[in-house]
Amino acid sequence: MLLRPTLRHVVVVSLAAVLIAVFLMSTRARGSEAALCARHGVDAAARAQVVTGAGRSVTVIGDSWTVGLGLTDLGRSWPSELPARVTVAGFSGSGFSRHASQCGERAFATRVSAARGADLVIVAGGLNDVDQPTADIRVGFRSLMSGLSARTVVVVGPASAPSRAKSVGRVSSVLASLSEEYGVAFIDTSAWTLAYLPDRLHLTPAGHVAFGDHVAVELAARGLLG
Image (cartoon, rainbow, N blue to C red; front, top):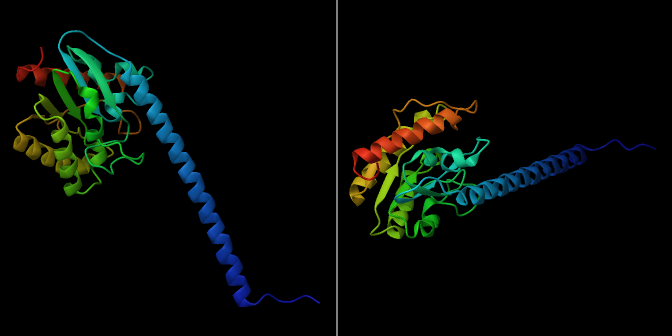
């Protein structure tokens, strides 16, 4: 004799199915995120091994633009355009604020030790902070400056990448204000016209050259490089 399922039985089975589906999706998402973070780590280590140029020692702390995400040759990311001996301490997806990155503790302030011995430290980013609270950006910036005390620092703000342009103004304004408070130079890049990859976030090879050239001009104008 066949028993007809009760409403309660149907609900329980349906709920179980939903929970299983959510678990599987969550597991896949975490696995995908872990793989992405691992890739970012490999790229960061590879870019850190590349030293470009000659002359004054410069360290650039930054995000995927600094690393060169999307380029065939990471060594051609924008810092390579600077007229100096440049090393890079970058990590894709990171920013000034602690939770800008989904890959754990990757805020810019965690990389200040990489700038040991540098004549000039350039901190470039902000695009990954567009969805972070202003208070968190401030905390991250203060932590960064505490680690770079007594160093010559230049902050390069976020450009208006099409996919995040609407939120760049707030971040740029916060960074400009903090830079003034700490007496460090700030380069506003939000009005620069650059070439982007189809993701509308990362630079093309030509975009990297243009960005690096613009930064070099700004540094020269301040008597810091050139």
